[in-house]
Length: 154
Length: 154
DNA sequence: CTGCCTCCCGTAGCCACTACGGGATCAAGC
DNA sequence: GCTTGATCCCGTAGTGGCTACGGGAGGCAG
Image 1: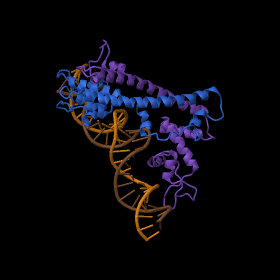
Image 2: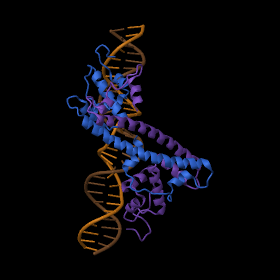
Image 3: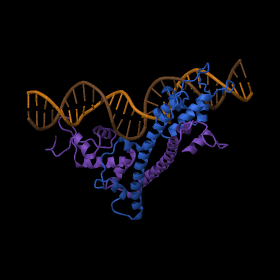
Image 4: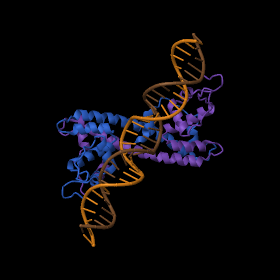
């Protein structure tokens, strides 16, 4: 298990960083993780640097950064290349996106919740859930296109 | 432009329902939209039924229902097959997922916001944004699954 | 040395589209 | 009737970020 040579096998790295083994290989092919040295038999051997880098990547991904954003942050994380301002820019941009998604999801939640709630209250002839998707829903404000109306729905 | 035969060309349907033309063809290949009649030259000719169905699909997608969920809802929307209870089930399941994502995104937002805010406050030596991703940060929260990581899909 | 676990690699699949490109068809103006 | 320019056709490939599969080879404990 490579314990004597002071290195980790791929599966051990995977467990240590909480990342799928296949994902590590994927990160290597796209150049997010460096290609590590190998045993004579061709098995990858990782060290602490790899563990920290992979953990960094994983946290970035969990926080919703794209692969390319993580790649940029990794470069900025290098003390020689470090630039807090650039890192902040990336995070701020991402934060804006997250807030947009939050707003959309919140609207979505209220629409869905309302439909489902109306469904439980009374046995109405037209199903409120299907009605929500149907063409003749609610107040048909004049001058609005179908497009506008369903945007309104969000 | 097919106005005399009382039908819509593909592009007109696209505009009427607010859906990309290519997307309509895609929906046809996966059987979500029926194959419409054609002109002698092979162009598709749509009618009001298609418009309504496509609008239904589009609204379902906007509300975050998967293609398969929309497919199920379309069947339930048929008066002969109509089942409000089943429609409600689908919507309720989806609502639960939406609430999960909302919770995750909210957590995300506060972490990102805190990092970015700390970054503006003072010129600290260790960048708070990069620190957030570094190895010695707070609770590692293992057990995050693909589900959490796929928050971006919204 | 034998069994069993792990790792190797390449490829294909997932979702829901979007993009591309070269050719055919349509409606309208002249 | 003919040309023009917009529209539409179709198939294929690409997107992001992995995950799954499968047959074979390496590694290590008993």
